[in-house]
Image 1 (cartoon, rainbow, N blue to C red):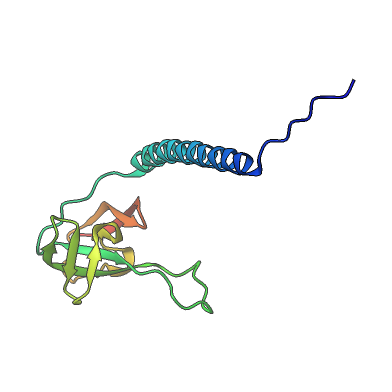
Image 2: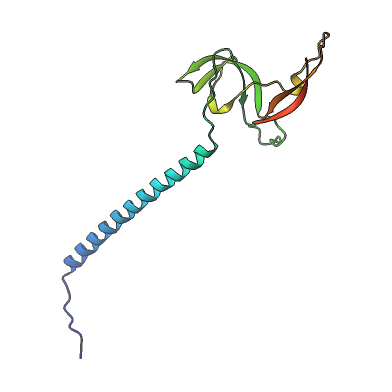
Length: 148
């Protein structure tokens, strides 16, 4: 009628509990490692979709460099983050780091090939005609008119 009650010594209960905890922690650690590996593969795949490879800037090339707005009080929305042109003076670390003529060092991800903006065009006295050209605004190519 009554269940058989045979209490185990407290030492065996603590030892079994500790072994169970170690086993559970090892399983949780292994599961976390698998999830991190899968997340790493997924993130690399997403990055590679948008990465177009690094351009091959040579010494003497003109580039735009990106400098984000640092002043929090000013409106960043209308600020052009691309400055330049600057000339590449030195190539460092296997075509990934570039020293520009302003003396600063930039990673290739913050540089773009220089294309003149419409505000940079000048009208000369000896105009031969008007030529349609493409130029960069941000990272998109726009078509505009240039004086030739």
